[in-house]
Every structure is written in C-alpha cells, then in structure tokens.
Image: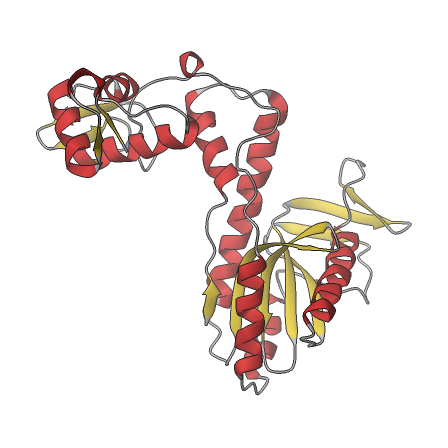
Amino acid sequence: MNKKPLTKPPDLIILGFLNTRMNLPKDDKQNYLSLKKGYEGEVMFNSLTENLECNCLILNGLLLEVNNTKFQIDSLIITQQTIYMNEVKNFEGDYYYENQRFYSSNGTERKDPLLQLKRSTSLLRQLLQNLGLYLPIEAWVVYINPEFTLYQAPRNEPIIFPTQTNRYLKKINTTPSKLNGKHEKLADKFISLHMEESPYPKLLTYNYDQLRKGITCEVCHSFSIFVRGKNCVCGECGHEEEVESAVLRSVEEFKLLFPDWKITTHVIHDWCRVAVSKKRISRILRRNFKIIGDRRWVFYE
Ligand SMILES: [Zn+2]
C-alpha cells in the first residue's frame, strides 16, 4: 500500500516554471536538469513498486532529521521483517570505480552513491532507535536507467542494476509478510516527521519583468497559445484546454512564483497576455477565488 505517494518536489516545479520563462543561469540550469532527471528516475521506480502485491507500506520522498542532521530517502518499503531503503539513481552512460572512488566516464570524480547510502542508513537506524521502533534495514542503491553501465563495480556492495530490479522486487513480493499496528505506527511516524523544505532556489533571484509572460501549453510548455471559443489551443502540439482551466493554471503558477503579490484582474491579465479580455479574466477569478476588498481595490485569495 502506498502510504506516501510520490509527488513532484516544489523546488523542481518552480525551477521548471522559471526555465520556461527565462534563461536560467548555468548552475541553476544544471541543478534543474539534474533534479528533473532524478525525479524521473523516482517515477520509474515508483511505477514498479506500485505493483507490489505483498503486505507492505511504501513511502516515497522522505526528508527526515535525526540529531540535527537531515537526510533524504527516495523510497522506503516496510514489510513485516525488514525496512527496504532505496536510494534511486537515474544516471545514464558509463561510470567506473577505481580505488574505491566513483567516476563518470570522462574521469571526473562524483559523489559516491554508496557513501551516501551508508550515511542515510546510519541516520535511519539512529532514528529508529530514538523512536524505539526497531526493524532491520536493508539499504540499496538502485540504478534505474537501462542505459547505465558501471565498470569495476564492487561485487559485494548493495547495488541493484537495471537488470536486477525485477528480481529484487520479486524477492520482496514473495517474502511472506503480515503487517500489524507497529508497522502502521512506524509509517505514520515517518510521515509526521517528514519536513518540507523551502522550495525557493537559494541563490537564484528573479523578478517579474525578467519573466516571459503568457499562458503556456500544459503539455509541451510552448507559448504558442491562441484562443478558439471556449478553448486555448497550442499552435505547437495542438493540445486544447478550456480557457478557464488554463487561466487558473497560470494563476497557480504566478502564486507560486510570486507568493507575496496580490492577485488582481489587472495582474493576471498581464501575466496571461493572451486574447482573453479583462472581463473574462475577472469572471474566472470571481468564480474561483474569494473576493477581498471592493471596487478598484479588489483582489482575490
Ligand atoms: Zn503544446
């Protein structure tokens, strides 16, 4: 049972919006692409664990803290006897180990996922101890991308390669498991301890004038949107979306990017910059938000 479904991390959502509307500085662009890739890997792994039929509890994307140290867990599977902790990596291309160091094919040393795993396993163990709810932990680095190759991989380390994922999950699936209140309590505890980090990129500053305005296509993110009757139509991919839903989507995007701004017809009309009249925008806002203030000073929450 999926106790904590996978959700797109807010920082990835915000960086995605910014990436569509401005040229991100090189480091932020890099950060965005690597977050995006990592998330796609988690989606892939999640689509496999979702099919588990054994009696288990699945928790995705946990950010926990123990003794003032934060750590992240991509996927946790609680079964009767074991907690499976999975560090999911979506690396692509060739990598190698040499003298217990981890490198990408061009010889650049990278953060060793095994060290990361050891650190989070130790922290999870400490947390379980503090909670007084002990279950043995089995921790794995799961390489999910079928285009990944690791040369000189150590044989006895906890690594699951793409060719082993099915076998790994099958093993979990066929191990008899019967959960009780203790397991539920543990899962609930993890969820209550989960922390949301501020999604706003730390050093990246942006302002309204810098960002390209307009409604974007919800499928291909292009700005080639025109209005035909009740619908917004994408000139690139042909996707159609009701004007109301496209405007509301743009309002949500605006609110996330500028949480301190007040939502007014004028602001949203400028933000959407599409052939939708102010009157229509105002009607949509009135239908979907609470009106605060009156006449000229009206805004929406
Ligand atoms: Zn499109």
